[in-house]
Length: 272
Length: 358
Image 1 (cartoon, each protein chain N blue to C red):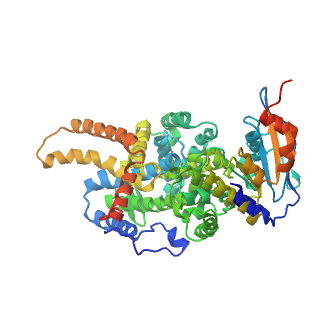
Image 2: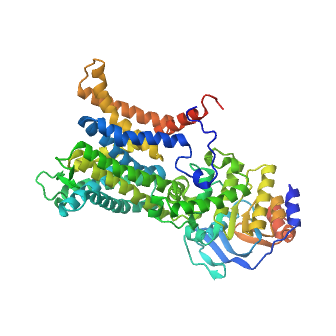
Image 3: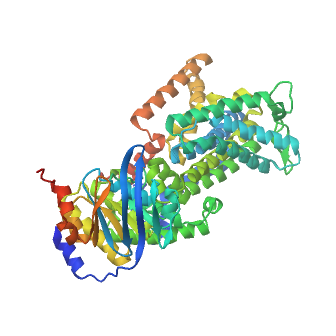
């Protein structure tokens, strides 16, 4: 499965810029349970940043903190050079953070087109009355956004299911539509929660290709959680390793792979 | 064959997003509009106006309002009857306080009061969902009907406690009250309902409609793509209650002529809910099919036996009607939750392919 991924990484023309988001000493508690304990790391512009760790390590909670779904008990989030105050998830989304979900969270009653169009809701400006009249501003806006959405549909090669209700689509395609919905928002930071969970090798190759293409063509910064080590080591620039809510490793795939703490967490420690 | 779509190519996004991408649909709607605007009013009897045409229009509008909330935004409401009452009482007060006010303006304004009440009772929707929200709207239902009964100012301290529609004229024609003709009332209602249906279709196919459907299908994902849940839900409550309120004003001013608080009780809420369910949640067409069915069924049951020489008492007809409606609701909930609208969609799909199966 590494073939395509390596070929694309090999001709790397991307530029990794300054720090886009920095998480400082994040701690997240639910009652007596500490899900995340004093974790700090940063995400640089244009990079693919992976978060890995065994089940229950707190990876998804970490994404939820970045999303604004959870407010950290302790710690600061710096985004685009400014400290981000506590805000609601939809406000975070309006600042350019988009995401996909571990268990697909599409709008099942809507078509592929409508799902991706919904991803652009933050950019739609026409108000209630303009939309009620439709003719004029609202229609022009709708068509302008439709053009952008069609580009995403082309990019993800899902033209044939444009008008199909997403509830009827197979799993792999649903994952792709969900990626499309996130891309539609033209995010500065794209969060992917296990984009390849439950996929076969071919689907994983396709998804890896899309992730690399998104990063390469649009320059989108990506933070992803993934369990498939082969994929993670191939496509990511830097990796954070978590275990039991703590950070146990951070660095390039090469560094992380050889760190003794990481090996211990994944393979277990000999009790001597 | 008749519905063949081959040869109808879309070359712009505008034409692909048109309301009727298939030519035959527009043609069909043209025929229906011709019937509604010309043929039916020219030929209908007073009985037909009063028992079929006007109530179908008003119930269809009320169901459209409920559908915005329940079918599109996924928020269950049992307070439709009371919100219709708010519209009716608001219209009555506006007309009696400002007799020179144009009735169209009064009806359209009265929807705003209902929208306000809807937003107020919709506030809990951010915290509670499903059945619990239904109970909150049920509270609105009982509270508002109680208010209509106890607050004398609303019915101008009438001895009867009911509101009586005064004679209202527009451009020299009596449009409401005892002197109005059926035809004038029908055209007034038809015009308003046509415009408001068009507005609803536009709202539900645009960005607002997508936000509502997103909230309905997966609210957490909706919030994470940037939709403000509270705003979207309250907008749904406002638009829904507005339509329901206008329907309520029309209900009293152009059909019943008078109303007492009990007219707006839970039975009315349920009737509108049944229309929405049988017609199809999340479909504007469905509201019309449902309203036609629910309004026409008792009329057909009343008159049909006479044609074939059967003599059935009207109380039996009433019972049979309730049984059939009940059976239909169970049938649709189990077999086709998307109602009559889905049945039509299936038929249409078959027609497009006919006579070839593929």
